Length: 391
Image (cartoon, rainbow, N blue to C red):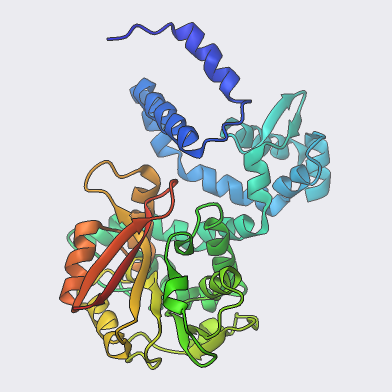
């Protein structure tokens, strides 16, 4: 065992805090190592405190967001603010405001300078971004109650996987028979916040277009050639990204989803909007890229339901068509904490599931498809594309 000079190590780690690490893989390696060491150094009492009070971070982020704390700090990165300035802007009690700021500083959401003055750090600025502010609202209002109902739901179902988007802890938490997306649509402004947050959460991860050879498939395309169909595509972020990457390519780019989703969609340049239910056969024939399914992991756990969705697409495919599934592909062992918690979130809110590579192979084979390739495109998370064609 290597003997480490702990005092020297502490000094080095303190120095790292202010150091920019341009190599993302190295930064991630250091982050994972320090997190693992931090957990190993915890006393049992510290571990219990961390677990018992973890939900408070989201709750207090919501309080701070509602008070405008993150935006106020981020608006002027070079200056600090006093407790009284925050209280004055929010019309809040200064004593309460200081208690809130003190907590935020303790978990790294803001920087405490002393003498009741606070300044922004990188996380403050990140949380002030509109997409993340929207994510705080959606997570606190819609997701947190569903997470809290997981124990009751699983006990009721004798610890079986949820079986459908309208039969999971989300319905129990919100006393509804609607799916999460259906419920959000009926809450003023919430579905737009949800999609706004989804778009923000993908920034910096890269996209499947970084590695997929779409240009090869698009060769010889004409104005009426169907290039890309994004099934269950929400507000059309994938379609927008495709058009941005291949601006001179001729052909049709088609966004499909349900009517209530399209009520939120602004007109998209060179993108067709088409109402389509996944339970029906795919109406667009011969698309080069048949679809970009995030639905299979994000909303539906039942293999038989996923199989039905895929089988509805196969008759529309020709010899050039390929199905592209944009999803996490989990390792057999050593799943990172972000992916694991995302899996639990999907279970609670959408009856969803993140799959391992073998599970994807089994699912696609049962639907009558064969896997052409699986390629990872993000280093921060195991985001991958799975390319499949009919057998």
